[in-house]
Length: 323
Ligand SMILES: *[C@@H]1O[C@H](CO)[C@@H](O)[C@H](O)[C@H]1NC(C)=O
Ligand SMILES: *[C@@H]1O[C@H](CO)[C@@H](O)[C@H](O)[C@H]1NC(C)=O
Ligand SMILES: *[C@@H]1O[C@H](CO)[C@@H](O)[C@H](O)[C@H]1NC(C)=O
Image (spheres, rainbow, N blue to C red):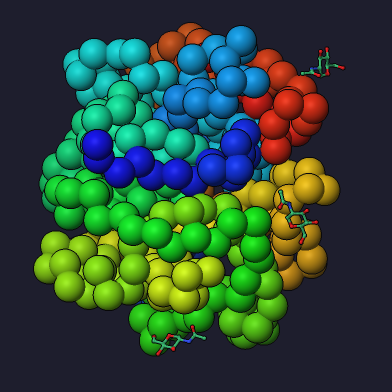
């Protein structure tokens, strides 16, 4: 049986320019790229695995991820796992970025993995052709981004469950796109204060990453952490030539999840970290000019067509969208 990427903290099962120039001499900064100020970020729905959540639907998105993206200045389109490849190709032409969220799913054989692979390939091709399209993976979503690049599941036990930690930033972090806009005091706090919530059993060790030619040439490691079993795992990464980003921890919980039985970081710096990363990713989305065919199609595709369910009494989330 192939390894399953457990990253569900939750249901937790306990498993689980325009530049106005006065003179030519002053025209220093002209941005040739058009900017899309009405981005829509897709969130791939996650398979329900917890018994408590099954009565509500087959797939779900915790509202925390939706709020996270909305707070960055974007709208959200939930993407179900039941479409055909052609339908996903159509959706791809309309959205401006994509998020793979945490959860519990087989990273090679599940519907979640199958659909993610379709979008990943479309994004590679688009970016190669100059059609900018960002992807972000959180927790199991980041694990999936390693499987998609390596072509195999390289996860091993790297348990860090219900623990907040500082990040051990690498040299690359200081020249990365992800952390470029961070004030220096926050970057420093990131290395000293427990600002990142971890809820995972598996991950990619630094050793595995460094021994894998495909991962090594595709991504830069931006941070590492030490797991309960003392192995060093990759906790943050960004692709060298593509706008693809992965975090093994959960930036959305810092602002949008409050279960007192979970170790969620809620300090001022933790909130700043969460805000800046959402701001960063949504801004990547503004560089994508994909759009819906018409306002009606757009309106009917957005998350506003759904109502989240109160889930605080049967999951680690306060609110969940079910599909
Ligand atoms: C931080 O990462 C470096 C390698 O980048 C490693 O040598 C060091 O042991 C790590 N320290 C901690 C506390 O994880
Ligand atoms: C998670 O950690 C918090 C804070 O340390 C603790 O109060 C809580 O009991 C833990 N929850 C679980 C499920 O272990
Ligand atoms: C959770 O709370 C809602 C609203 O109070 C209630 O309708 C529902 O039955 C509760 N669910 C469980 C599993 O306790």
